[in-house]
Image (tube, rainbow, N blue to C red; front, side):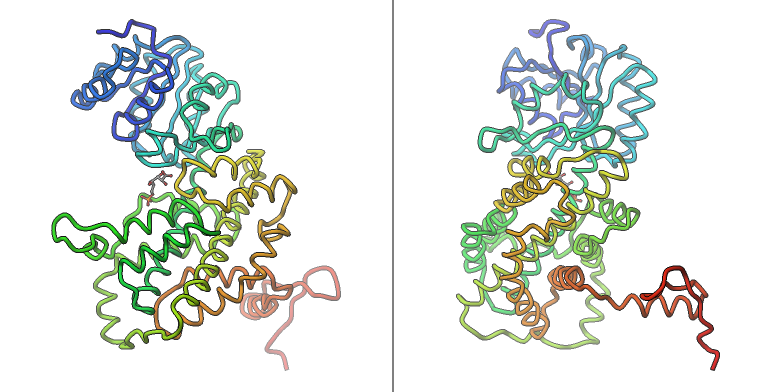
Length: 473
Ligand code: 6PG
């Protein structure tokens, strides 16, 4: 053994791709790290890949604990849910007063809130930390969203700041708030991720089946968009995906992939939480629903046979249409960020996170899956007005949305006429239209509720609640 006892500055439990890559990233920045995985092959692979005395993997928990410097800081990168509790249970008997456990997985924020006090009672500090950026982010610089006691964060801050992605000399990590603030922000990050992915998929569908673009043309369109206001990681990888050949068939890989999308649940959690807090996030809800719908393969086949209506190809100048669709897509994407940030604002009040939404936008600029150029504008919007009630009310972004909303409207109409399903784009436009509508037909809903359930209604011209016998002549 090369690493001496009590030498490691931090420990990692869970040496899957994410865990090992984060360890290697820490070692690159000069930190001494011990890794534990109950699978000896994974533990050995870490030591071997690192090939450095600064990294040691082990499948022996007692040995792992002995390698850690006191007060110990142990990071968990294990699947959310029961595995996190199982690891904590195994770990706690080895830990001492003042030690720190960091859950860096996609844990549900309510689980984080439940775990922290139990550990605190045992003298152990707990941080719930969102980490975004996938395998390559973990290896070369993720976006990190920490929440929990501030003093606990200070203990590991140098490690986090060193390994995080850097944008304009700033690390993409900042302490977000107490309790489950970090996991909440990560959950909403994923909800936004679901929404953007759904809009990109719908746009792909329209360009493919409505406009008849082939994979090369699709790749070029997304690459071109990535050079402009739509610049962002998800747009960039979408372009790369269309160009990728299948090793098995030699054809484009995208055309060999089944049209059923899986999920681990973070998007659904975002929608559930939004419903609880009564904050509308319809594009995220829709994105979750469409993943579910994608699994209804048999029903889709049968309904396709019943409701026959072939896609009507769209004619027109392709270059002009692509410019319009890019503007439409960008406008719809802004509404998703607006929905996600409105939810964060409400959650911050409800759960006492005290979130700085400008700081959230800044740490999403690099490393994470939703990183995109527009986050600079979002950061600027919340820096100018930290209490901005809705992102769509920022004057600069509002100007863009105002200028481009007709592109979204026209694109939606075009896809609807062609018969290409674009429910995410429709719902984003609907969200915008509802938000900018001073009057909504909710008076009718109040009247209906009062009619059938005597739920009463409020009047425009007088305070209080009223009831009417609607059937009385
Ligand atoms: C990230 C990703 C990451 C992961 C999600 C995907 O930020 O790095 O969001 O957390 O890819 O688990 O979620 P689904 O499996 O639900 O699509």
